[in-house]
Length: 529
Image (cartoon, rainbow, N blue to C red; front, top):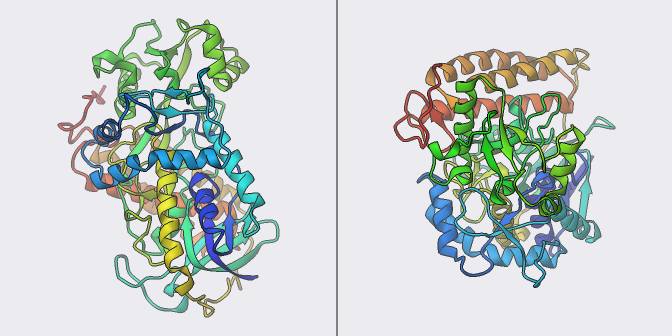
């Protein structure tokens, strides 16, 4: 099947859908999503979206908090753009039907999370992302120019490479013409040609054993862009959320939102001792990199498999009202959070780096944009400030749409792109090779490329990864295409980028902590115990 659309959007979270809604009045839009349209990382965002709404908060305060969290690696111009445009993007989400919680007086109820100096997080109880997706999907499904292909998988971006023309990373003039897209139900690979393409596939934290990410977060957009020779940056900065529910039988890990600490919950040891003040004057409301490393330190020192988050002292009715999802989830495994401490452990949560884009969401490849967790905009630097991610998606999808609409009519469809050819390929009957390799990859990344790193660990991970890469490419090159082998291939690409960039950064900064270069780290960790 061949298809031509003005705008191809890969991903159906806030980044993809907000872009689609903004361009749909001017052209045809095809949204490709690998699962159901609502199964995205956005759906699982509990805490909320940060924006300046009322005094005493100001843009300057939000900018300062973001720069501080980013450990001097943020692009100050990008931070200013994002924060000063935050209020308008929130108003737009509200116009699209998003219901944020309000006070009895009618104002929006604002939460506070780690690293924020003011209450500025809009939320819908503890299911903010799900509410945003509900509203955006309703709008998208009702728009006559938007087609949503659910349960379809984007395999690779189309460039001059598919015309037999060599391309290399960083060279000018590489163009994106669309993507090959697999329908797993029919095994048919469609050639979707597009004037403009938006990558909004979310993150990649399923490269680790323990993650809060849904299973769909396998780094597909970043891997596709990397293979197409786009510039990728800052992949070493993996944010481990400090507080996922310790429940080893469950994957993905259930997130205990940072908003609960903002509401007054406190991190404690098994003995009930508060410990965060040893590491940061902000205590349990320190930024996530500091809290995650502090918990890692406490666990190493005690030998415990987790620490605790104590909310027992908080008002019972208010706690249940504001965090009903967390209350119900914990109760389902026998924990009453109004009476018992919650066992928590850090889990891979957010990829701060990604496909490098400019201030309009444009990648180094012409006609290709990226937004959300797939992109590296310069906002987060070395560490993402809590609840800035949904805001970043809204801001940069808006800016990308503005840019795309100016020039899309000047682009022609590259009809010379050949259709997918699987002649001579064989059905892979050795699924165990894929599933076991994924487990091996996740083990390597967890043990050698986790919260605390060293050059020795990273080099060992890279050596192991080279073997896995060669085995997988050999299998891929002779197999009929399938989602599992594509996801494995993408995870390997992402793992390579994380390790490579971690080895290149000869310092500890933000989310990347190395025992070989400890001087710049916020928390001194004894990892040789």
